[in-house]
Amino acid sequence: MPEPAIQLIDVNKFYGNYQALNAVNLEIAQGERLVVCGPSGSGKSTMIRCMNRLEEHDSGRILIEGIELNDNLQALDEVRREVGMVFQDFNLFPHMSVLTNCALPLMRVRKVKQQDAEAAAMVQLGRMKIASQAGKYPDELSGGQQQRVAIARALCMQPRIMLFDEPTSALDPEMVGEILDCMIELADEGMTMVCVTHEMGFARRAADRVAFMAEGEIVEVATPDRFFDDPSHEKTKAFLAQILER
Amino acid sequence: MVETVLAPPIQEAGIAQWLKRHLFANWLDSIITIVFGTLALWALFKVFGWGVLGAVWSLEDRELCRSAEGACWAVIEARGRLILFGLYPFEQHWRSTLACGTIVATIVLSCLPWFWGLKRLPLLWLTGFGLFVLLMYGGVFGLPVVTTEQWGGLALTVFIFASVVVIGMPLSVILALARRSRMPIVSKLAGATIDIVRSLPLLTILFAAAVVVPFVVPEWAQGDKLGRVILAFAVFFACYQAEIIRAGLQSIPPGQEEAAAALGMKYYDRVFDILLPQAFRNTLPSTINQFVITFKETSIVTIIGFFEVMASGNAAVGTGNWTTQYVEVYVFVGAIYFFFVFGLSRYGSYLEKRVRLRIA
Image (cartoon, rainbow over all chains, first blue to last red; front, side, top):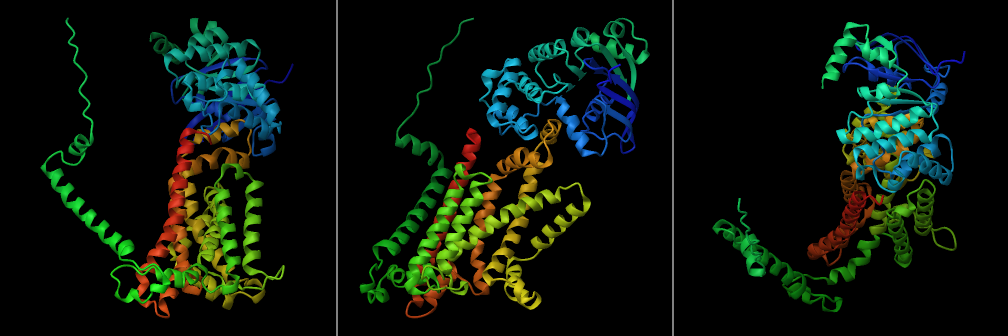
């Protein structure tokens, strides 16, 4: 059996006395798409941010492509090269053009020459259908366009895993669709994806499994069909009732 | 419903309308306009009468100075070289002029975006400062040696300013980054350094560097007095500038560094490509402010016996027959400061506009 893309074993995380993650166990296979949902404060973002060590877990083990995340900085560099991340607030670099936003990390991290990096950036920008905006600066773009650039920027590094931390939550409703389309396209290409989102339509369409979190614990993990039609846990039912009511 | 179409309001044009709207809108406005207008005109007339109409311009008319109503600009002709060159040997003044031009050119070139690179900028500075020292100090190509004690006037002022900024800026970046370090020893040490230096007056620091260091430090490590003073001044500058940069770093949303880290960028790439450019951009006005303050504070080195332009101005009226013409000399020196400081602030607003237009 091939090794899982992501493995969380008994992971705990505290902020002071507050327990953000409580004995989280999770295994994500190569090429699998996992959607994580749950009420705010349930630890979804903390968990996904632990997967590339933007947050450090306090106990337990996290393995990405078999590499353990700990104080070993070399291992961390290796993991971050393989794991792309997309944030709620896009986090594009405001002092650089769209093209430089995508090309510079390639030049710095993979030591690619400027010309080649820009060519590679244009490919990914084209894939996100935003190549025509390459010369603009981030704040000249709409939220949806910025988020597509952010996805392109992450894809430039040729990651094997993509993490999405509420990628549509900061967007105006009419722009959510274009981002979800991009993500569905990625999913169809077989990228390993972990996505924190409340877009249940996306979960049904693209996810292999859906995980529900509450109070720092993973309450339930199931296929979309079972998750939506026949949730086994009371908390899941309550959450789904609330979310689908809207 | 019937729509009522109103004609657009008639735009009142003409000087009379403008005056009425902006200066004489009501009786209070009118009084203020008349009072301050009169005061301004009177002051302008006085200054013009003193500085131009009643002024004595030529050294040949110098006898007139005693009786003239206005300024005696002849003093500048007589003492100008002392003001501009200080104690620098008379026959060698051309060297000081060239050196001063070199340093000013270096400053101007440093301001051009084309030179902003980790190779170009140091190379430019090395050339500029090297040429300056070569010209001023001499000792090669048959140029007689002029020791730093004899350096003076405008060349010295500009040299001290430029050196303090060139040494102080990198130092301030190091201090700012150290203060934000996750290692407590490093951040505490940087914090203590900044707080201690900032709590001391510049005068004390320069005095210690010039006078106290020779008693404490072995002779081989003392270096030149001017060098010590510049270094101490640069540390002082760096501690203030470090806090400005730190404020700039703190104003950047944490998501910026997280995004860079998530892309795999290492600490120094994150600092130099993502954080510092934004920090400088955010703190441009305060940085230019710090430069202006530093330029004017160079006059403090007079206290330890360096004749920069202000001290030279004092010397120009302090001796001989020109003691009554101190106002003219101060106006002249003031004009020199104004020239540089105004240039700096214009450059600052150019940079701000450039940042806003995002050619940067």
